[in-house]
Length: 359
Image (cartoon, rainbow, N blue to C red; front, top):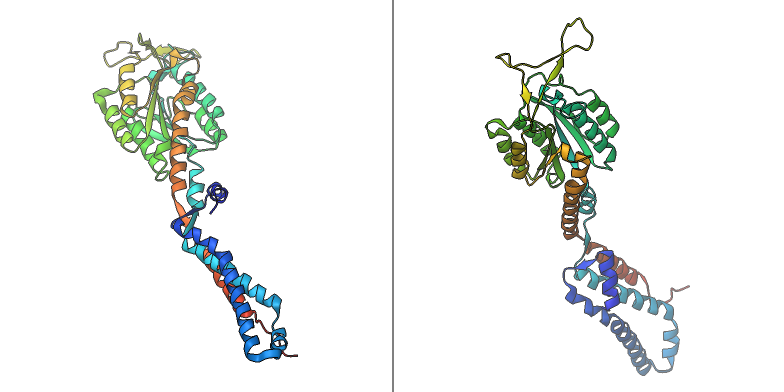
């Protein structure tokens, strides 16, 4: 086989399991010549035996049909050799599955506990986070997005979807009343996110990302243990901290107050006003346990979008190249096609008679 033919086959994705057979294709023209020589020799022997009548008997044979038989036989031999070389092509089903390899399944875990109502981020930590999540949703192109709202417990508010409009509608109504139990249970958020992403099916973990948006402390390191379990499934967790290290009081509306818009500060059991501060150390540890990053929202103008561009997209591209390479390695045998052609050509040869039918 010529180098040009080999390059063309490689370009269209055809490979051979037994390429050593292919040089035998050079013998196809020799087979044609051998059959033509055999025919002429048979005619000479007929002339020797029959004498002057050889020309009359030879006239009964149709020269065109002889050539057609030789052509069909040679082509059948060539097709059989190709089948014997065990050709294969890239499995289209595997290649189609690789088409989604660059798509990201992004699950946002949003802290909706009362501490997120603190105003050290304008207008509040929660509203600033929701605004940035909405901007991130508008930037996605073909990726899937989901939402887990959590406080003392976690709830899958929006299953992973490409329907950005529905996601934004449900995000808009999420508030501090979306989860009944108070507190900040980072472990519950990560477990809920991990279960939702693993439910998408095998192979998607390479493109699964959790964005944990919170100000909370990781009490008793339960969040780190949950992050380690999520990491075992191949899921990366990036953390975005909203709040300040100095902390802030939490202002809430007074229920049943006579003055519209009246507020009071949240107090603990002893009556002291609660001051909530960002805990970057816990969030850095959680992100590090999964190979993710920690970003403070106050350090970047667009923290979520910057994290998406700088960390999430490069990871997805790497996964896409890996899956595409694996898909290209999955090949489907197609020897049956040239083998079928060889059988049909040989049957065609048998159907062609060298002699003219009697009138």
